[in-house]
Structure formats: structure tokens, C-alpha cells
Image (tube, rainbow, N blue to C red; front, side):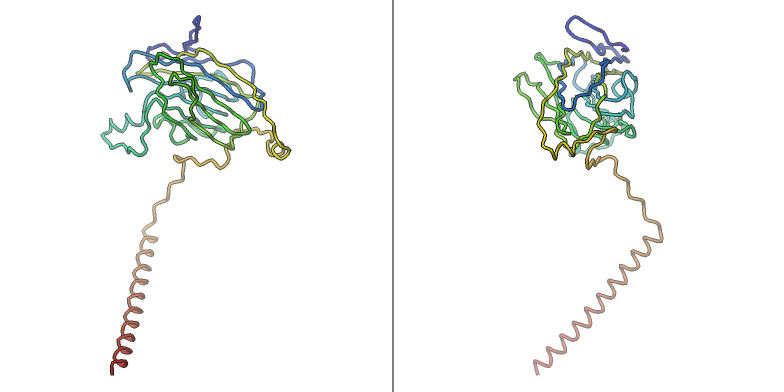
Length: 285
């Protein structure tokens, strides 16, 4: 789909050329209850650090083959998206505007993140998906001389993402989120896009495994079929409702009653102090 090219050993979603996008999708929906998707990939190109882009996304969504602005696929999707983002858009915009970027919230790129959407959430490309991110981690995956792997595991409504990118054949944790409810019958896909910056985004293999998991009778009752993606107790830091500014009347009333309370406390204090002094004089005489 798009500019994707089928090679002998891999599928190149996008070449190291500007303004390209490509994707691959499976034709048969996944009806597995518990599963694991292993992605063998490679990202490489001529661009120097932070002068490359944009990365690729792994999808488990209701719709397939829908081009769009989110790493080459549609926004406001239904399902799961895992993003291997290689360019820090938000940080670069802050630098352009000569605004100080908070180091406490700074993420080191490349960065792997994930979100679950019921169709109402939009991916904020300018902020690298931060407002809707459920979890993520730094992953230095560009221009490596060894194999790089990413695993998405979905077991008992728990979503975990593991990485093997250090050439040590060891998995390390990236994301672990309980209470993720994903419908069955969705499609797997991978998409990528380049803009003013570019990279080769190669998919060497996609392997889906069915996982056999024992459940107690109570777990079976709780594990009901869902029809919309949802995450239990989902709190997205970038989507809090902002506090409305106080009106002039409200501010006046707060200041007025604060002053009244202060004066009242001051009067009470003076009365108590005078009584204490009177009692002290009586004890002295």
C-alpha cells in the first residue's frame, strides 16, 4: 500500500526519501483471545541524530488500509496503536519558538509509546502523542548493526510491550498496562511516513502467536466480550479539563471574606490577650 516495496528479505514501508508513506495490513481479522505479536524491524538512513523521521506504527484496529496523518494511517481510529517515533516534534517546536523546554517532561528519542482509542481520541502529532499516551520508553533503534525486535503481548486484558534492541537477545520492559479491553475481529497492520526528514523503515517479519492461558471461573465471568476499545481507570495527563478562570465577582468575594476572617481573628486575639494580661496582674498583686 502506498510507497511500500516488497524486497527479497524484507518489506520497505518507506525509503529514505522525503514525503513517502507506506503500509501493510493483514487480510484476515484476528479472533484470538490472548496473543503476542513479534515485530522484527530495522530503521536506518543518512540523516544525523534528530534529523531523521518520522518512524512507524503498529496497529490493531477495526479498519484497515485507511491512509492518514498518524504515521501514514488514519486518525481517530478504533483500537490499539504502538508508535516507534524517531523525531521529537514538540521539542523542536519549543526550540523554534525559543521557549524553554521542561527537562522534567522531556523524552529522549527515538521513543516507543502506545494509545488505545474508541474513535473519539485524536493523536496529537505536534506533541508526539503525549496527551493520549498510556505508556512509553526510550528506544535507541536507528542505524544499528544488529537485529531489533518489538513484542506486543495481550494476555488477560493486560497489555505489555517488550524490546530487544541491544543485541543481547534479552527482552526489556517498555510498557505494562492492566485493564485494557480490546475487541476481537480487528486487523493488524504496520504503517510509516516521511516528511521533510526521512529514513528507511524496514519490516523483516511479523509473527503472531496464540497464547494459551488458564483462567479461573471468576476470571471467565469478568472477561466478557467487548465491542469498543477501553482502558480501565484511564487518566490521560494531556486531556484534563482546564480550570475555568474565576469571574471578577467571585474573586472579590474571596478577597472580601478572607479580610473579614482575618479581622475577626485579630479582634479575638486582642480580647484573649487583654484578658490574659488582666489575670496576670491579679496574680502579681
